[in-house]
Length: 322
Length: 124
Image 1 (cartoon, rainbow over the protein chains, first blue to last red):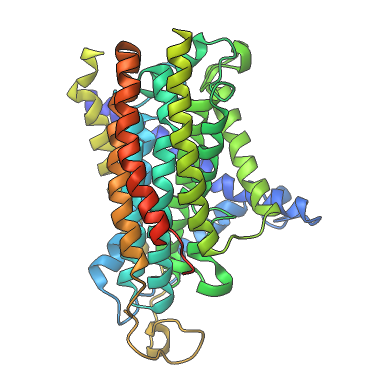
Image 2: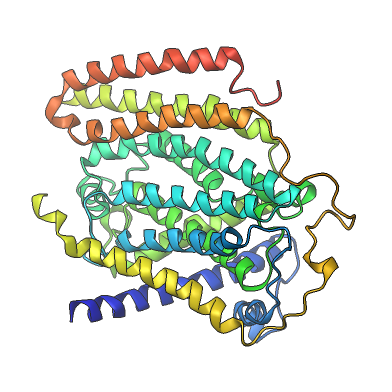
């Protein structure tokens, strides 16, 4: 019985998130279109509203090309590893009080672990395709993800110190009891570090080096086609959703309204996630791409010292206040 | 929160894992009966901008990737050490701050060494 209820919950969660992911691609194309003074997708449905569904059906019926030289088992498994590890992190996100599928006490750590697993999918895809572009894309992606994961992890230590918990629900509740209801005001440096690291973790512009189309064609998914390519795409967008949700939970007050304005909690949560996603897309429409050495320099020489300094400063302030 | 370690919480995660795998596998498996499958030699060759591939694709790559990986392990372990420290910070107070300061200083020495050595400099 319990398993049945869980299955229904999982079906709802995955269904909602996949629909969200499909329409995130639509919003991205639409917003970038309008920022570049063009309309974006217009033909399929009213104002192109059915475009994501058409895209999904198209990729479902596309030929699944497996290169002759590819390492077949790894080549077949890589997209699924990517997608599954991203999907599993959805389980711990609290959309409202008690609305998390699994309210475990190490929620934040769990999400880090899962997003690290996704980089296995990327490196395996790069290696197994047996092509130069994919190997280079995979290696770059790996180095980028592990470099920025450190600053991502360190930036959240400040939040943990303030809330005293790794449980996402408790972090939100601890924030609700503070004056502004958001940690972004008490941890601005951490938020900056987190945001930059988040862009790099999800391979977004200006850090989309792994799939820099001008030099690496399409990076680690060059050899993929049809549904498998769509799975990498889905994994990337679910990753964006998860990272934006962590940002919302840890810095923007989760399901509580700003300054604790009451409203239906999940709406606040989704609105804040959309806000962060909009900034993602805005940045994509605005900024050029960094060079690879600049990317590494920012990660190691700027973000890590900043994050460490922030931890130390937070500790000092806490001692002084107490 | 002692009661939070109920296995039922992790059951949900296990189920989501299985559902995720099933979603991926079943979508691809059903798709086999619908999609076109017309492979020929040129299509199955690794993409290299239209030219026939030259050399082995699994070429040697820069040693920098290895040093980055080693540094990652050191710093990731540091970050993991900081998590429990951050959680009990309120209870330990000054002691925790001094202790972690010493720990971070020790790591910073290594960090500065790697910096001066040029391991963080990609274009050198």
